[in-house]
Length: 259
Image (cartoon, rainbow, N blue to C red; front, side, top):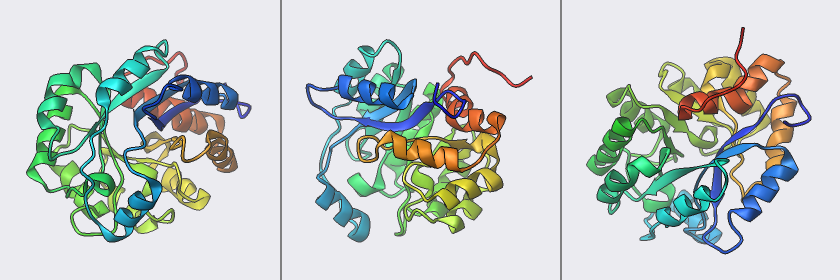
């Protein structure tokens, strides 16, 4: 448990494909007081290429080593829950075959250049629906990958929980908050966004629709924990934000419930 009085479940961290994992992530979690994390493959692109694609568009023909992520998580004593990081152009069949080993799905327009109205994205979400998986994605500022496109996708799959990563793509995507507010199966995840955006997410969506995340290793967890502390939430809402919502979305047991 962290110093601010609530347990912490990091809904968005990444595992590198190297010999130091999962030990490096687990050691960082221990140092920050984080008990559990949902994780996807990391390091698919160098930061210069990723930044250029976020700004200008484009597609990288890179594949996540999802089997390795699963193996890494299997060595964590249940603390790390694996997400399947899917390229819609190549991974529909692989995700269908392996879905039972994973706890969620990630789709990245920034990395793989996909549009959210691509039929292959719909196929992936259909598999996620059957598996009971949440779908994590980060919207961008170009057609096909905007928050409005996520809203349309979520409306087509009302039984699926979608997670709006980083509270949008600018750090201050208040307009995006307004777009997702009427759509109850979209939750916001707060890694990387400004404190004011995270606070508005809790106010406008309600504490049951906001998830704590870190974006480790690009962001140190202590930075995100300081932001969570700065929100000034009461203990019940803080618990939902840092623990209870993640457990609910992922179907995990929690030992603490509201009375």
